[in-house]
Image (tube, rainbow, N blue to C red; front, side, top):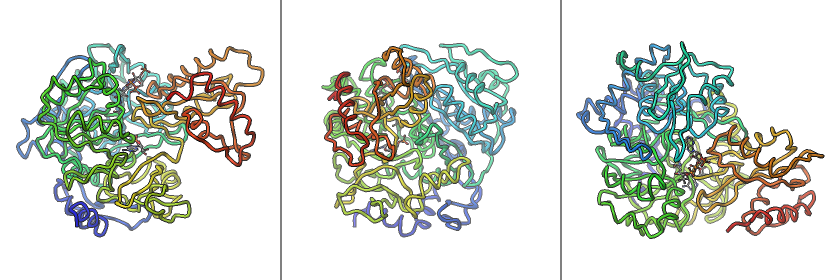
Length: 631
Ligand code: COA
Ligand code: AMP
């Protein structure tokens, strides 16, 4: 039996033994009563009774074991040109002092802290400082607008917010502080304190009594020690798109998270302590939480924290410059970043300038890696290119080619096989397994492994309804796909209204809610249409109120601006068209899938239950008039 197969089967047959052994690699103040606690099925918990601290495992442990002078983080900003090396000892000192500041502001074990920050090392310090005192952080991606931030503040009810004066996007400075002030105005919950990192590019206006300058408070701060928490206590909440405008607060606990992420660095990514690991994502996304900050630090690596884009900052060689300059062993990014590089430098000429001899593996996730991009990356980099599949909810990979265990052959279009701990099946609507090669709903037999989410913040019923109700005994991933005869998994599409834009997960339902708030819009639909760079882009269909005389072009412009200001620039909502009616089934369900196929120029069938087939001809004509299908 192959080494992968052995590990995989052991993890499913004896989860207690498997994860109990792995957990010996973690520092515990008190070990567990049970590895897997199944006393409240279908809600499972890992390492119940154990006491642990996430920050201790990320920093103190390594300093105590002699890694104090190794870089914990290398901050490389292509936006400012700054490169800063921060050792484990320095990270520990800063984090312990910020934890002291937070305690002084009334943040206690279990309190929430919202972090709305750009890609600077202080963001990681803020997360770890919360973990140090048992506070629960919730990092919000900087590309979200005030309204989205307000929804998260309302839900998480933070004692404090940590922010910066600005983020830096190519060609513009995004002032964060006014966005935070507006979000706090919009929210009925008012955090009592706000810590602001003033960056040289913008000076934030401070509100006396509530706002504190990061640098000022750190000058007089005293360091505090780690507070032991239960393994099952929450470490963070990360909000992710659901089918409505109300995002889902995915909860991550402390113990299982340390165990699984530390294991993943060696076993999935094949990286040893001391090596340099780079996840080119944003700390606001789950990839950033897990692989810019936590996993590399748990395993004693040096993590790159990169502020910039794959192209244009300044050129498509920036990824190779960073790999070469900082001796990166493995890079993890989204396929869209590689499509952007390939578009600007198809021959890979920028690669020739850099010494890539330390670079061993490229990992891609966030969306399916298309075969073209996979081949291009393989040819140019001459290293294994590993597609792997995961979700905010799972916190780490469900499927991967675990090169630290055994490198399996790569199959194009597949994120390879289930990782140990993940009992993945493809089921039909009657909960029966489908035959190899047939498409079904991808589900994971419970329990999910350590590190995956135990619940949604303050929404246990929603957790059950959204993930556990449809396939009793399984977690519904909401991805559809198939498993081939060799056990390789192919993830084909979402089964809900989520779209994937440049590796960012977005809810079309949330965009529709914003569009219907426009006074002239009676009804609307948003679908994700294919885009060569970003994978998908949202496209809106608007039905206007009867008698509306306004210019359609103006209404579309206002709608585009509305989504940008309500959800944020990250929604990348740039195009909509006015239609007379929306195609619907006789029961009133909007045929979004059919509209998407027409826009993409894919074959489609007339749905048997359609109310009025003529409307599809009208939609086809309207789409053609604005240049669809684009490919
Ligand atoms: N703060 C404020 N605005 C932000 C932002 C942030 N942190 N991140 C993105 N934005 C803005 C961008 O400036 C852009 O604004 P614009 O409409 O004015 O141009 C908009 O949000 C859309 O951003 P994005 O979709 O990222 O497009 P882009 O054109 O800036 O860059 C790529 C395209 C492909 C280079 C970029 O999306 C990328 O690097 N993607 C990698 C994705 C990734 O890391 N995913 C995580 C999962 S692994
Ligand atoms: P997020 O929660 O933002 O990480 O997005 C998760 C979703 O992105 C998944 O449910 C998939 O639809 C998609 N996704 C992520 N990685 C992959 C991959 N490697 N292959 C196919 N789809 C992926």
